[in-house]
Amino acid sequence: MANDTFLVLDPGTFTTIQDLGRFGYQTLGVPISGAMDAYSARAANILAGNSPTSAVLEMTIRGCTLAVMRNARVALTGARAEIRHNSIQRPSWSAFEVEPGDLLRISQVSLGCRIYMAVGGGFEVPLIMGSRSTCTQAALGGFRGRTLQKGDFLPAGHAEKIPGQNAIPGEFIPEMGQDTKLHCVPGPQDHMFRDKGRDLFTSPYSVTQRADRRGIRLEGPQIQHSHQSPGAIVSEPILPGNIQVPADGQPIILLREQTAGGYPKIATVVSTDLSKLGQVIPGDSITFLSVTAQKARDMNLEEQERFKSLQNMLWQET
Amino acid sequence: MSLKINNPRISHCADWGLLVEFGERIDPELNAWTRLVADRLRQCLTDSVLEVVTAYSSFLVIYDPALLDTEALRKTVLACCSEKKEDEAFQLSSTAEIPVCYEPEYAPDIEDVARFNNLTVEEVIDIHSGTEYLIYMLGFAPGFPYLGGLDQRLHTPRLDTPRKLLPAGAVGIAGSQTGIYPLASPGGWRIIGRTPLQLFDAGKKPPVPYYAPGDKLKFKRISSREFQRMAGEQSHGK
Image (cartoon, one colour):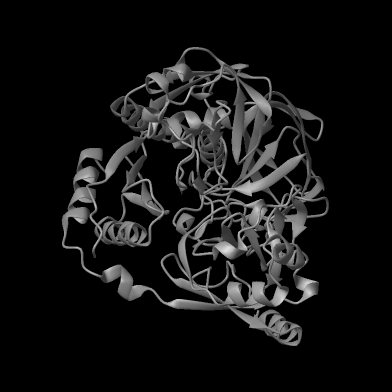
């Protein structure tokens, strides 16, 4: 097809197309999906000259190798990895131009978990139920509902804008490390835990092997349900960031591929910290910090402002 | 409505969710009330709300805090609850009839379910297809119905080891629940039949074409021949 822009030579471990999510269908059991690290996805898009909501590639643990078929501007953000453009090494959190015949090779991550790549004009897969995000469990959206495979041709749109700047300034690049601090608001069922769920905030938890787009199981000191609590509730809708605690007392942070849950939720991670969860890997440590709902709202508004100023800075004519 | 419904418990889910809980029960009237209030809310909030998600007896409002003040949202929710409890939600519900083939090739566990409950296979089919179920909510997977009303005589524990792959349309029993897997997936339910209908289709409007939360659902017994014919029609209709 005329808009095919890349040929996948090596798909990497788990690479999907994602945008900011598919909202409006959870009542039908269709999860939100969308980029796990939305901050990196949005940043890649504005570097590429796109709307922050355009579709990007989300690569997990090991990046992909792509042959370029058309002139395009690409931008990479997210986890630390080696980015090879032919023989040139490119820095992450920056954008550059590619030409037909070029080779792009993204290595295994050395810090973090997920790498994002945007292309000018966005990845042009069909808009399914309002989103281009992939939900692999339902074989829905993205590139034929699945992870990329060798031999796939990836279509892109036409860039409408060439940003004046090619790199995200350092102060806008999130820190990554093995110790992640997450702000969260107690509730909605903190009353079902001993001391209103104070246990969660008293020591760090570590990320287990059971960590994916659906949720992250943690391991650490057992969280006690209160004596009156049944330890399970009638299934409720869930929000990414809800921290549910089953009878074993080990918390699970729910993320983007599940619509309902039946365990009490001790607290909820603020939306602006969810992107950090897209970058944790098994063995990492997580410390929970309690904030009020008002503070969480302030954090959200501040980040929206900050992102706007970043976009203005990058899109300024030079 | 005979049920006495108290004001809901409204709690924050961080900065962009508001959870509204009407009670800790699985109850048809509470479920209808939950959906009714959620529908009213959907009608009076538009741009600032990403979605309102309903479950058994609670709903979640996902919103943009830059566009909507939490206190205003809370007041709107309460206003939607305080209006007169008319029978709006009941009037909208209909009964979906889902054809199911209970013949052995589609029902690997039906003999086990019969044996466990001291019934014949015929009795299992008669009871399962003779009951009207309520769709309380959809979840777990796109289009997966949480059904209420499975006859006690059919309650059967899950398989000890879940199957790696169940075909789309598999109808099963797990404990006191019965349900249908709209998409091929792993699962530990006892499979007693299969529907030829495609219960989730992203290309259709709505993508879950045959039923919605609040509807009644009945299983209609079909033969293997009818299954083949309907399955053929489904794939031709694409």
